[in-house]
Image (cartoon, rainbow, N blue to C red; front, side, top):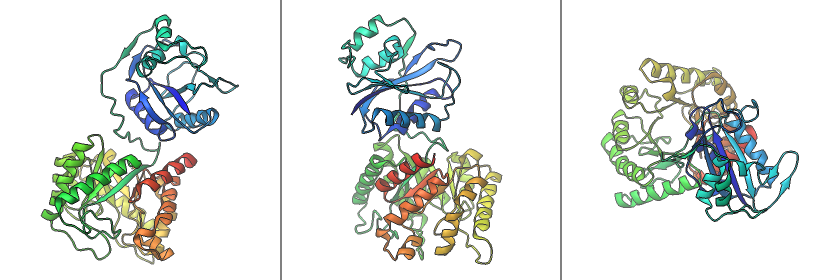
Length: 435
């Protein structure tokens, strides 16, 4: 069904609030047209900051009533609290039109009963639907704008950057897609798996990145050294050579994508950041290379610190995992990493048996309660699933989906996965349940 929505914000970073709301609407609302952002004077209550407003048109399979409930959940997740009518708000989403339906109920009126009075709705509406008209009364949007009550409405020229993910911890769980620039990944999906030609590898990396972003990944994690059991360390020069051109090419093709480099080597991380990487993802927790913390401080990049130290069978597994994560975070803080640049990963599959990994999974709520830092989980295709179900690495979709859902429901902020299409659906549906 065709639907038109109006969004507004006047608390905090208004443009970012609008971008986040648009990203939370998709793919339930598939956006076809979206207006520029507009700055408008407050309507109905003048003693508050100006608003940013935007209007979008798209498609949805939700009924009007279900769409309203979905929108209200987005508003709550973004932190909207009820104050007073027409008061300040972090986000406000209104349904203007739903096909050519007329809806009148206690909870919902469509078309929106006051849109004709609001220049901050009509101006962006005319921008995206210049030939549009009220589906019930037939009045053109252009004519309604001409007779609307006066009010300051200014079209903003700043870039919207709607494809740049807004990372706001606690609002949703973000999906990190794994791009393996290796010939020997345990999951058998390495870019160099059957051909070491750099041009072919580059084309594969670009194609996989495009697919992941389309399927719902907010972050791409590029690694050039496998850390599978029994892996062979890759020399620094070789690891860097595998990474740099793909990072440059992906950055050029997708300028708003968030790119993470998966490495334990400080020099590789430095080169990757210069080439366009935004994050460092260190499975060594910043301890493998003594310069890694210094590198993170110098780049001011977020750094993922993963627990990988071997767990002792005699001690409680959850306590050990939490202690190791605490030690990694404390070490990074002492080294000068800003608190808002630290992300922790409990390291499923590292330094732990299959059953120990299950114990860590059971402890995810405890880990979430213990730390204020964002938390990442990498459960994708892990041996825990393979040993439980006796499945090969490329046949662990169901088990991975269960672990991803558990991470979301435990309040984890990022899941690192191979199968982005399915896991983005898993994460999104789990978010709708859990948040």
